[in-house]
Image (cartoon, rainbow, N blue to C red; front, side, top):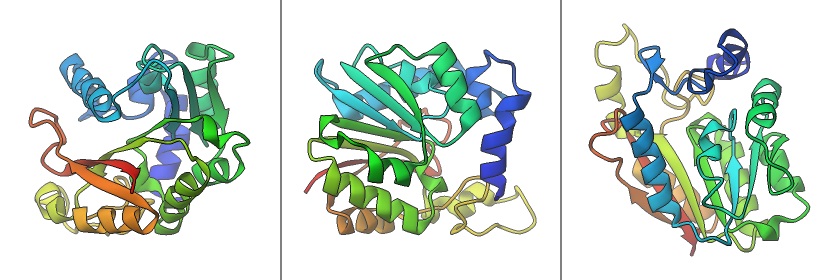
Length: 230
């Protein structure tokens, strides 16, 4: 188990039960993310996904559900999927509103292979997690979404570590820069914009790279992507 996976599975156990952002490391230097930064995240997601009242939202790698909960009022139905038993338990206890807004314990690839009614989803969010999929998993997930989820209109994947900005990020932080291809590292796998676009398009998606809002605290080394049927 790599550093990122261990942290993701074990860290929530050390946090206060209601410290939802800290449980998923939505922090800056160990401190809670300021509300203006959270508002930027909410705004960029709404802008990218262009919610309609009839939308059914799939939140892939949803963590503890706190981020997805922000959009319960934007979508007619919602399903959050994550492989962490601790985080899904938190999500179900604090945010679940069955039968329309629910959470499921499953890995991303297994879920995409096994979802019995994939045609119900119209929008997809994957926030803060795509970099932790291996290259093979990332390709499999995107291919399964394209092949099985026939009504998905837009996917928003964010924030993606920009491989071309890795030197800027790591400068002075540590004696030796870690591998940018290791999806189990603290930040996960880094992509150039060209590499991410090629990956998505190989899996059948038309890709639009989206810049992070300039005021976003990670804007200097991350980007986002909106995927649609090609």
